[in-house]
Image 1: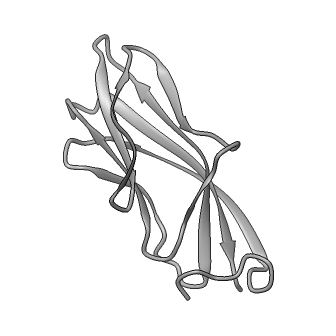
Image 2 (image 1 turned 45 degrees about the vertical axis):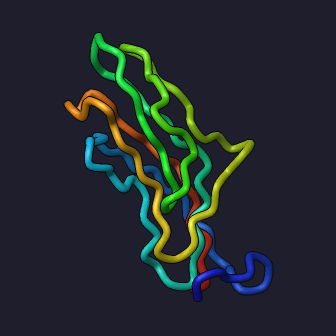
Length: 117
């Protein structure tokens, strides 16, 4: 089921948070490989751990949320927040790509798994 009905078919909600270094080749931060579920991305934040600026590109599947967004040195930027969530259907993913790719950027996503059990 690629796009379940949120009202009548889903009966379980799980929360999760994941994090990852962001590489130049693109890093899938959240991937929905579960059938009969939708992932609701509540928050996605990128942190720059170095003393130099870096930039990040964020996509869901092949559609850009932001491209080459500068993440200032030693700071964090909220890319997605709960006031404007995104949904990942089955086989969809949230991907982040760093310009420098020297593990200076970390991505953290908080999401709900809406599932039919």
